[in-house]
Image (cartoon, rainbow, N blue to C red; front, side):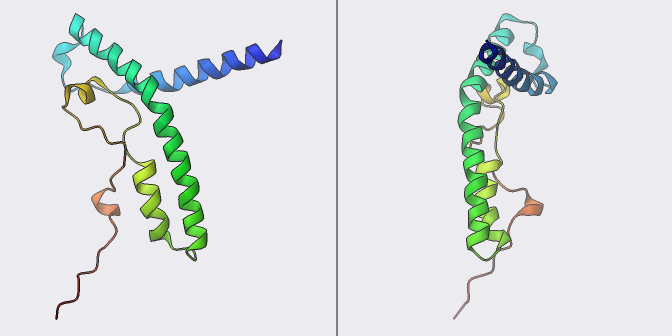
Length: 126
């Protein structure tokens, strides 16, 4: 009898985690809000997030584990670990109507911020 209650709690927690970030984001195209088109795009974005988020979360968790192993086996080289962590853990987790309109790029693989970018050494010249 306790198993259905636990499953219900997990489902409610999962749904509340998906809904809160989507509601807190401000839209750059506020003109569509309150229209049928805006409601349709919001529903499509919510459905897309429900389908997309588990894959992105699993990819990020796997990247975190693999990056941790890379850190360990590379002799505690942080740059080696970050080369796995940044693409797997950064990126888009919640799909918004702006992503569906093409106004904002959808990034499954993350990109490091300019301040966190790894320095590159120039190639030697002959």
